[in-house]
Length: 112
Image 1 (cartoon, helix red, strand yellow):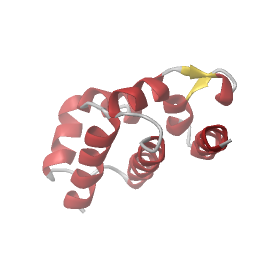
Image 2: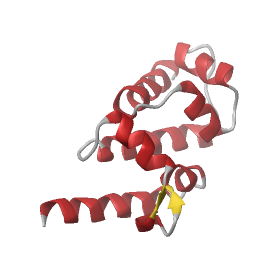
Image 3: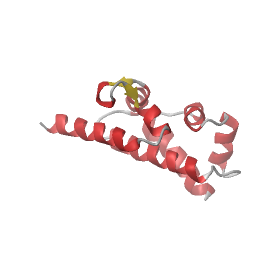
Image 4: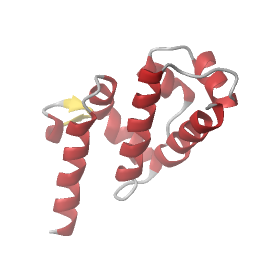
C-alpha cells in the first residue's frame, strides 16, 4: 500500500505542482505525516486515501489544460464555475464531482 500512496503523492506533486504542505493542509495532518506516507513508513486512513485519489484524478484532468503551477493556482482559487468555492475546498469536503463538472465545462469551452 505504501508504494501506491507514494506514487499517488508523487503524481500530485509532479503533475499538479503541489508540495507536502499542500497535501498536509488538504488532509489536515502534519507535513511530517505526509512525508511518512511518501516514504511508505505510514499509510493514511481509507477516507484520506480517497481524497488523495480524487485529487490525483482532478490534477490529471486539469493537466489537459494547464501547467502544474497553473493547476495548483486553479485548485486554490475561488472559481465562478464552482459557485465561488475553490476546488481544494470541494475535494476536501468530498464534493469532487462538482470539480469534475467544472472541468468538463472547461473542456467544452476549449473545444467550442
